[in-house]
Length: 140
Image 1 (tube, rainbow, N blue to C red):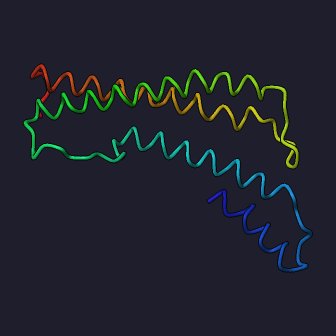
Image 2 (image 1 turned 60 degrees about the vertical axis):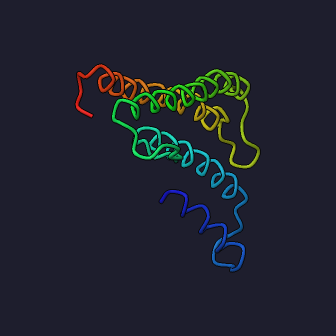
């Protein structure tokens, strides 16, 4: 919803004389889009809404839990890359500002390590559940 405002301002200023042409709206829209993608990625991992490819036909609950653990391990690798590279990415942008909107760039770049940290937390919850299914403490 927040993304609609700068994009609408940009379109209206481009095709009419109702408002002056704002240059910073394109940059702000891009930054908001980055945050929207990262928040969506966090929610996707939290809700286990990322895509899955079924190789086996209806595996047993314990087999399914084991396969989910492998999936979580692969996602954890990506989360660690996001955290480690994202911290370096944010450090690089710490004292820089964007050219048009004059926003501090770290506010955009910090989205990567925060996303990685959120993935790690959410994966921890899911791994605990899968281990509970494997050990029989939780129902399948």
